[in-house]
Image (cartoon, rainbow, N blue to C red; front, top):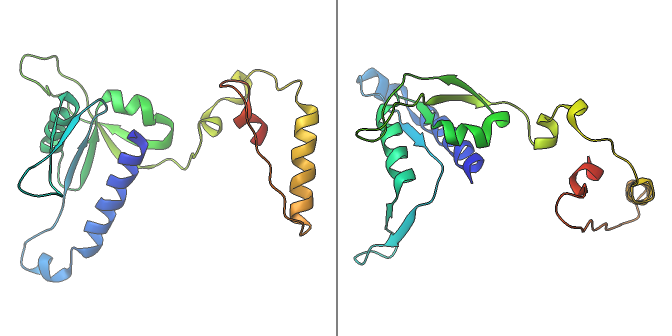
Length: 173
């Protein structure tokens, strides 16, 4: 998913910075990478000559390639569409407007600076914008009892199951 791609890019960039040794710097041969990330569908096809090599095609792959080409050294650029999906989880700065396709309108890519420290959408949500949590007191009491028993040294398992949108995540937070 998009957030996993951004986190992987941040980690790769950190590792490349860590292995850029003083010897490379002394020889004026810096080691840096540029990354571009877009969201969308792609088609991956295994190449016939090697079992571990793939060809990737699609608009998102082309846009990511163009973003990487536009990125300065040691920068991660994401498209506005990708930013909408990862917005609360990363800190970004706007980049320079650029066209990713010939004859297309320019977009403003965003440079990923760091992770924001927010781990879930519930953490990112404004508490006053959430609907009141009502009608789940018995279920919440069972979960609290199981947690207390588990903390007391008795192993417990709780399974929270239900249809989408009924508040499973909220009851756990």
